[in-house]
Amino acid sequence: MAQLDVQIAGLSLRNPVMPAAGPPGWNGDAMGACAEGGAGAIVSKTVSVLPAQAPTPNMAQIPGGFLNTELWSELPVEQFIAQEYPVARKTGLPLIISLGYTAGDITDLAPRVRPFADALELSTHYIGDDPSPMVQAIQAAKAAVDVPVFVKLSPFRDMRAAAQAAAEAGADGIVAVNSFGPCLGVDVETGRMLMGSRDGYGWLSGPALKPLALRCVFDVARSTSIPIIGVGGISNGVDAIEFLMVGASAVGVCTAAILRGPQVFGKIVAEMNAWLDSHGYASIAEIRGLALRHLDERAFRTSHVPPDLDVETCTGCGRCEVSCVYDAIHVVSKKAVLSRERCAGCGLCVTRCPVRALTLL
Image 1 (cartoon, rainbow, N blue to C red):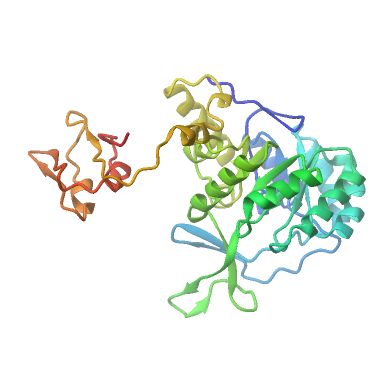
Image 2: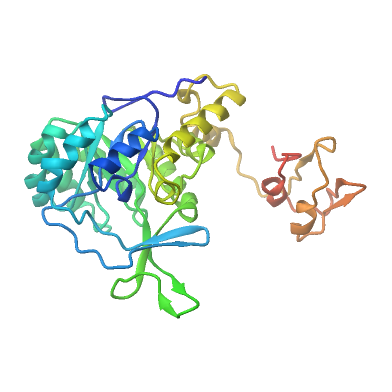
């Protein structure tokens, strides 16, 4: 069994998987269920000085992803302090309390939640490309509390500049990323918008967000040395491994926990462990940042380099043949045959092969 415990900004986690701020941590019992489901830390739903008044409907599953027009918590912060945070503390896991949004809000809220918090997470969902509100919020939190302060970045800004500004302001870690939007979904049977917001807009999460989230974590990791919690489209252990490879120290899961329940945290942890064991890694420390290290070794090329084909491994499924627009690969007698002269080196067949009979160097 691989070593899965991690240290992040002084916090000790039994594993690197936690809920992302949102419905999975909407109250104390829900946070307790995340702990029972196998999470390595708890992140509460964002609170602000006043409860949110979210439109309804505000969540919808869509092909390949998820839309929401959720806001911060509809529960008052006073209820969290009196009831919900004490229940979450009973889990014995590190509790990261999410707060929003302005420096004034943080100045008010941070001292009030500090007795329950092992760390704070500051939401920047509604902050634009100007980093100054984020910087001011970080500074307000650092002045008010003596626990680590993480800041959550949205994916539509210059991630490197934002990460550098956050680090310079004193942030102890970065959470990347929040949901992306605005986006739109329509119920084709009724012609109505899926979301109940004024314009029908929602914010995208789930698997569709993962490539964007990975890029954002990758950019943050190349611009700052403070820890990163990767969030966005993580549904299984391999997804989590990818985030660690691009520089994250831990991961947050929201949409998958909504759709599959809090047991998903333990399932992702088990899948990570199985993957590490099967690939000969003794700990997650060995894979963290692996993609960044390979980037330094990777030569940019424009010449057409065909993939290598292991005919013995090939099962003749035909996926490569169907999707090769260059007509460079065919299945003959239940085995793929590659025409290196016709191959454009696009790499699509490599990503489609279910048994990895095709590889690119």
